[in-house]
Amino acid sequence: MNIDNIINNYAIVIFIKGEASNPKCIYSVKVIDILNELNVPYKAINILCSPGMKEELKTYSNWPTIPQIYIDGEFIGGVDIITEMYYKKELQEILEVLLNS
Image 1 (cartoon, rainbow, N blue to C red):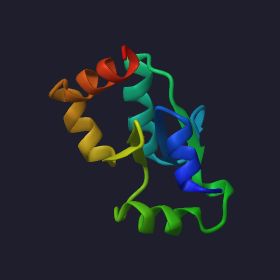
Image 2: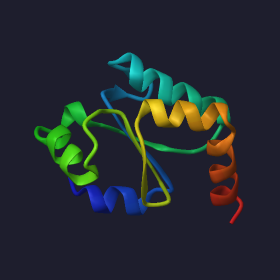
Image 3: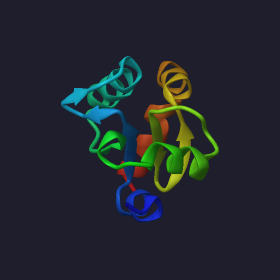
């Protein structure tokens, strides 16, 4: 699975442990809950289905943890950053601009 292809084919991508409907870690749950609350379309990629994806993703983003979120092809961060951006309304602003352009 090519990370470049994935993040360039979807406006909002989250790499998580598990499926969006059945996440396998609390951090993935939190990111999914935020995106679902904002009612935005996103592509969730289960890193557990692809051997080596976790390490490849960490190298690609230079970020040590999962989940990871990409918006408009740009790495935004993990659960802490997304949560902070959400509470500061920064995430909503970015998504509004993206989805209304």
